Image 1 (cartoon, rainbow, N blue to C red):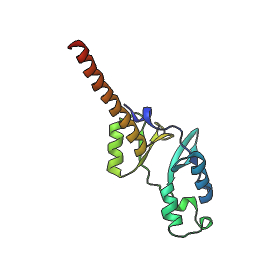
Image 2: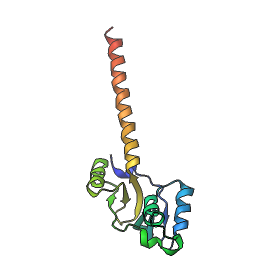
Image 3: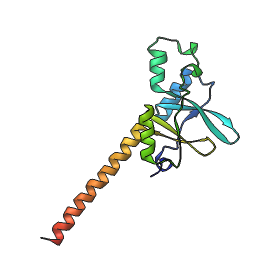
Length: 149
């Protein structure tokens, strides 16, 4: 199970010149909690930062800063944790845990953005797999009952 198979490839990207208000509107429009800031390099979107809905609340609203007085660049996180598409899902989760991040960017061999995996995505995936295991156990019990009345 590679992270490339399970990551969300519908990543909402933006550029450094995005305003705080534009960022909030983009998040609302696309129903996402983050925007990945990219720079174009050849044909690749290279991630250079990320801004989350929490960044908007903690760095702008909670500080009572006027949205027009702060730039996107001022609040974005630039210490990105990335992982290659071929990394295992469990290895990726361990990397997220070790770095204390709720989101990890999935990149290709050239550093181009391919997707994102969030803790929420991982929990949903694990829940689905657990549900499949429960169904397997139930099926096994039913099969045994049919075979050995």
